[in-house]
Amino acid sequence: MPCLEPLTPLIEILELREVGCDWIGDLRGYYAIGHYDPVAFIQAVITESVPDCPVEAQQVHQKFWMEYPLEIDSDCYCFKTCKADVEGAFAVTYIEI
Image 1 (tube, rainbow, N blue to C red):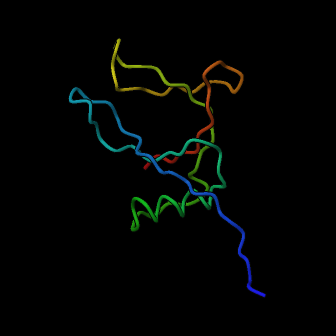
Image 2 (image 1 turned 180 degrees about the vertical axis):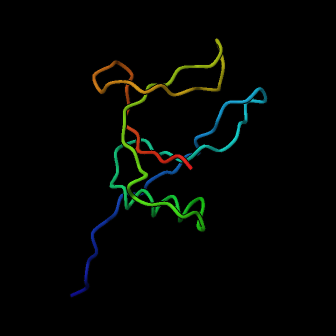
Image 3 (image 1 turned 90 degrees about the vertical axis):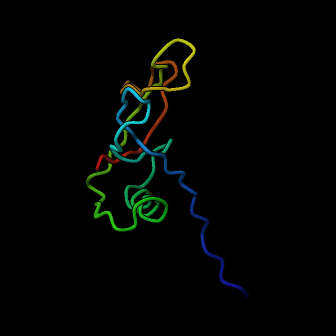
């Protein structure tokens, strides 16, 4: 009988950037939508983004954010920390580098 391994959820890693006048600012960290185990999140960051970046699980944060456009009719959004019960809130796991 074959050995079945538990499925690990894929964690989509996104870049967290400082907003600049050119709409592309300096890299501040990485985030994923949803609350993930800090070790699994770090492994995903290392695998997908920065294999040589020394990061540790205690640097990982889990919060709730909401997004809002920087300008009217803009495709560029900022995130603001909020409480879980605020309309439009979503869970995030993130690390700042």
